[in-house]
Image 1: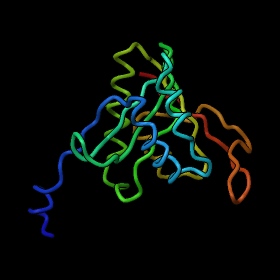
Image 2 (image 1 turned 45 degrees about the vertical axis):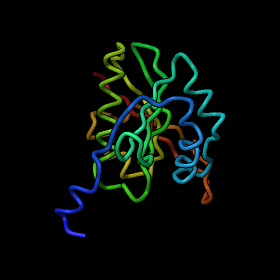
Image 3 (image 1 turned 60 degrees about the horizontal axis):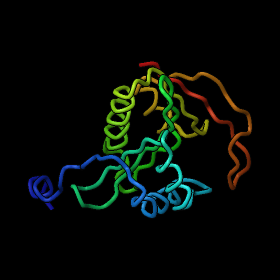
Length: 160
């Protein structure tokens, strides 16, 4: 397919608020990216909470789920709980767009500081967060458990 036809056949990604009805799709996508994926009921609970703030990115308004981000927000602080893009869409700047949108919405709610944890060896995610203005604020030794053993978590912070 030529670049010209691909340009016109690919709908612009659509970002909207996540709702509890998205939970089964979020759980499926989360399971592709993490050793221990969250269940649909865990996503439903998080999205139903007063402090839950989530956004989904789709290929067009009703299209395929390309990614999501979910935070707990209690202004003036928030914590990003998870951000995932589908494997086939990585490297296209979608996570950056999704994160930028999400941070803008958090700021509009009065958030002035955002925290997150990321596995120390997850270089693409760390680079994304650094480009978004996050800096390392701490380290949790042996925080994550995976198939190859325990790894550290970097705690990162971004002030708005």
